[in-house]
Image (tube, rainbow, N blue to C red):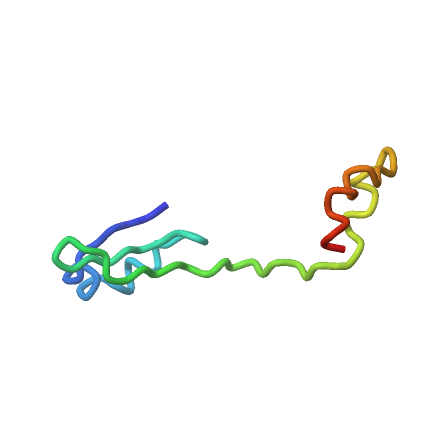
Length: 76
């Protein structure tokens, strides 16, 4: 979700505007009706680190099929 304010509004009320931004929300600042800046609140909860192998078992190969690879033989 985005909130659009003018440069004058941003200068006068920036602390309040930033305080009311939710996680991932945007504040777009305009000047002469054109966007000139965008502030995005960082997520307050950091993402979990990725672990190798956490998708094991989600994909199942039903049959080996090398037939389709014949068209790419010149590239291999």
